[in-house]
Structures are given as structure tokens and as C-alpha cells.
Image (cartoon, rainbow, N blue to C red):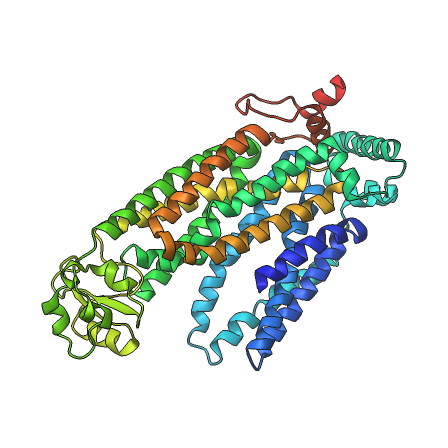
Length: 504
């Protein structure tokens, strides 16, 4: 429900950004998030908890597309990418911190109320601090408040650059007014008829959709499950390893801050996706091995536990062919695999899955498996998982948000950013809701292979359709998109910002 709220928040947020300004939308997002946290923490039942999640989702959706936009429009070109990447780092760092905070609250009375309620404090803090910050200078200039915009730009840019920046902004707005008749008139038809917008949307929306369809939130949401699927039985171990995953995600965002304005957006995306393809190939191969080489079920080991044998196993005509994976797929009722006490890779017992049986298994120093099977390749799955995060985070994790904050003409920036963010959240919802069903239908190995094929498609998309915007003033990016649609030669260095405007 939070993701559903985020879809609506991102869609409405785009229009609100162009109408009311970036700063006001962020204040509204903070307010919604705070209200949602209070509702969740005080909820007497599930219904009100869900209402709170929707409020939080609305706030997250608005903030997800407004924050990069606001930072981008209030940053000098040479460090714009790094500052928008910092936003990404603080999100992933916040996710890591939330794991630690929730771990601390597991021993507190009213555990989950504290977990959801404490989220209101950052929203309140940001609301207060946003009151001290100015509006986006580019939004102000577009609304005819030139003097207020110039004051803010003079605070952002060095003295020798500020006049050129003001001149570029003035020319951009004047060109819009000349082309459209009024800088305020805007609709979807004009949006799609404008070449730079159409090309920008192709790159921006494409990146946001591929960001989700290469499987990142599946890995983040289900990393404890993936760790258990790799053969690590303990819930605690799975959760601790998930904490490592969140830490690697935050570390990748730091890498992005360093390289984004040195290497460039496009090269970083290509390196990122190449690594993602390799990592998903490793994960697919490992899960294929764990599925096809899982320990057998032993009648001797199973009969050691009286009256708790898995019913499907007892009635199976081919029970001698049963292995751990066959046992875990039994569903009337659910069954689990209790490993051999001497070696987890040796034949074990197939038993009814419940907490009592799990405790009985553990008492005999055996391991209990319900999601994945014992495997000697489990450590390879962890390496694949770690590599996936390390490659994804600096490129595909940060760059789609950076590109969408700088690639659109000023008059369409909020609306287009909202469209792209909405596409991201819809894709997020589709992938998150389909992963477990897909895993059940075709298996984990094939699911990761599908993500790998999509990643190859994403790589080709980036090479063909995504332009390099490193170091370009925002107004120059629009001129570049007007000039050409396809951008194959990502290895060539682009012109310096003002060389292009002089040539024009």
C-alpha cells in the first residue's frame, strides 16, 4: 500500500512541482510522511495501519521525484551529479540505519509501534529545515521572479560563472515564450510534440523502468529469503547477511558520488549494467546447482521423528526419488527439511513444517530448512548477491534519478519528472509483487536469468538512447537533445559546456 501511495504521490507531485514550486512540495511531502508515521504508531488495528502506510507512500512518492529535481536546480553544473548522488547515498544509508534501529527496537515493548513511529522524526526535522532554504532559482525565474532567482544563483555560483548562468537561463525562458506564446501554457500534446522532451522522456522513463526490472528491489526486499534459498538455514543469519546487503548498497552510493562527475553518467551506467549481468548470471547458476543437487530424503532419518512425517512424502509412490527441494514444494500441509546431524549435505528428514517440529529438529543439533536447501555452493550465492549490489548501486541505483533531474526543458521538468517517477514506482510494484509467484512457477534460477536478460536489454538501451550530460549546464542539455536522438559513441568526450553555446 505504501508503494501504491507512492505511485499516486509521484504522479500528482509532478504537476504540483510546476504549479507550486519544489520547496512547497517537499514541505507537503514531509507533512504527509509525519502524519502517516503518527497514524501507524497509534493504529488500533490493521485498517488504520494501512491508511498510515498510504499517507507515508504519498509523501515518499512526492519526495522521490522532487528531491533530486530541487538539488539539481540549485547546484553548479560541475558538482550537480555528486550532489544528487548524495541524495541517493542518504536514502541507502537511511535504509541501513533503519535495519539497525529496528534491531534495537526488537527488545522494546510495543516493538513495531516504535519502528514505524520513529520515522516521523526525520520528516519533522526536514520540514523545519526546509523552511530555512530558498525556492529553486530556476522555478522562480520561470515564474517571472527574476530578481529573487538572481539573488539565489549568486549564492550558488562563483562570481565569474554566475552572469553566464543567468544569461543561459534568460535565453532558455525567452526561447520558450517565443516558441509557445507564453511561458505558462503547458499540456501533454505540447509535451509530446517537443523533440527535446520526447527524447528526454524516452531516456528518463526507460532508465526508471529498467532500474526496477533488473531486479534491485527484489534483491533488497527478499535478501533474507534469497540467503535462505542459498542454503543458510538460520533466520538470524539471513537477517544479519541482509544488513551487509544494505551496507553495500550505501557504500555503492558513496562510489557514485566520487565517480559521477568524473567518469560521466553514461559510462557509469554501462559499467554498472555489465556487472549486474555477470552477477545475475552467477546467481542463476548457483540456484540451478542448489536446486538440482539438493540432499536426498532418507526414510531412516524421517522415521526417526514419529508422527510428524510430511503427509505427501508418506503417500508418495516414488518417495525414494524425493530430495530436499521436492520436500519443500509439498503443500498439503507445508513441509520442511531437517538435515542430517553429521553433515547437512547428507540425506535428511522430510517433516511437517511448524515451530514445534523446527524446535525438535534444532534440539538434535540439526538444521531446519523451509525456503532453500543445504548446499556447498551457498557462499557463491552470497558473492553473487554482494557483486550485484556493488555494481548496481553506483550506476543504475543513482544515475536514473540524476538524469531525470537534469534532462528535461525547464517548463516540463516537474511534469516529466513526475511521469518518470510514477513509471519507477509502478515498475517497483510489479516486480515486488511478481517475484515470489515467478519463483514458485519457474524456480529461482530461471527468475534470475530473466532479470539477467532484461539487464542486457537495459545495457543496449543505455548505449543507444541515453545521452551523456556530465558537466553540461541544464540549459545546454536541452539544446543537445534537440540536435540528435541516438548516442552510440559513449566513449567520446563531449564538448565543454560553453563551447557548444558559442558554436550555436
